[in-house]
Length: 147
Image 1 (spheres, rainbow, N blue to C red):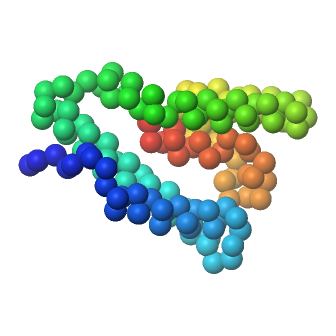
Image 2 (cartoon, helix red, strand yellow):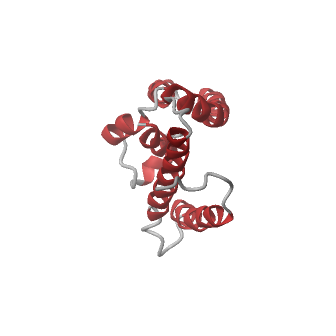
């Protein structure tokens, strides 16, 4: 079975655009978008499809390397993640009271280890209004994808 084409696919970007709309509407609090999290499931499916295509292509060409795979992912994901963490740390230091900043600091370490989903599932009710006060909560999905 041939590997899926790993080149740019406009229709996949279109699907991403469609999937992000209910997620944004849910987080913005628009009525009727309580199921906006479905967009995250779509992102997971898209990522799985694209990653599988890359891995199958590498396997067929005899150049598969798990280290190379994660190196490419790190080059793509880590720069933006570090910017988000740095900005969040600066804002957290300026705006949070010391106990809240300590909790935030623990979440930074969990994010850096791609374990934030494990931390947040035990400490935060994602659907509670107070969840909006957890600066790096959105990184849970990145942790799931990397695991």
